[in-house]
Amino acid sequence: MSVIKIADNGGHAITLTNFDGYYIASFSPPESLREIFNNIPHLKCRLDDVFVCAPLKSGTHWTWEIVSMLLNGNAEIIPKSKMTLMLEAVPTEMIDGAPSPRVLNSHLHLSRLPKEALEKKCKIVLILRDPRDVAVSLYYHCKGVLKHEYDGLFENFLPLFLEGKLMYNNYLDYVVEWEKAMEERSEIHLIYYEDLKTHAGGNGVGSYHVEMILRFKKGYIIIWSKSV
Image (cartoon, rainbow, N blue to C red; front, side, top):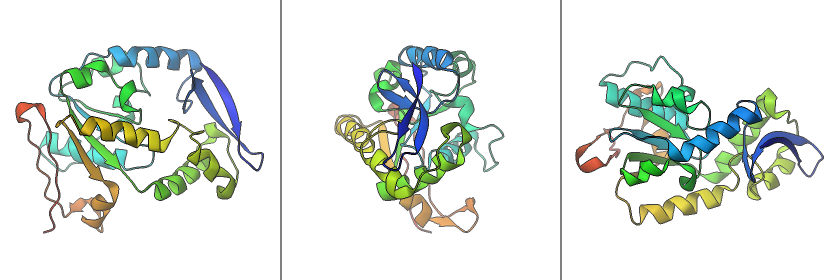
C-alpha cells in the first residue's frame, strides 16, 4: 500500500492511497490502512448489525443518521460521527468494541465487505444516487479535502471519475456488483438518494415526510417511503 498521485487531463494530480490497485482516501498512514483493509474481510459480524452501503457522495451520512435514529427509537441527532463505525476508516478493534445494535457503514464494493455480513444475512441498506450528481459532488469534495491536494477543473476531473481512477475505483462496477447480489438476496434493500430528497421537508431529517418501517424478523430490513 502506498500514497500515489493521479493526474487529470489538465496536469492537476489528486493524492490517494493505492491498496493493490484499489484506490482509497488517505484516512491514515499507509501502514495503518493496510492493517485495516486486511482485517475487514475477517470482521466478526453480529446478527443485529445493520450495514449502510453507498458509493461516495450518495447520502451515506444522511441514511446512517436515519437508520440510527430508528434503532434508537427517537429523532435525536446522533452525537457521534458515522466515521467511528466506517469499516475502512477505523481500526477493527474500534468496531469490535462498539455496542449493539451497530449501524456500520462503508463505500467499499460488496466483495470487500466482511464475509460474515453475507454469511449471517445481516441487514443491508444500499443507497444509490444519479451518477451525474455523484460526479459533481465528488469533484467539490476532492477540491475541499486538503489531503487530496487537488485543484483541477471539472472538465478534467470527469474522465477520472468515468475511468475509475478515483477513490473506490469504478462507480458502474460498484453498482453492477450489488445488482447481481440483490437478485439472490432479500436482506439487501435499495433506496435512492433522490427519493429521500423528494419526501424530505425543508429542515431535512427533522421534518422527514416519509414513512420508514424497519422489520427485523427473519434477518432482513425493509425501508420504504410513502408521501403523507
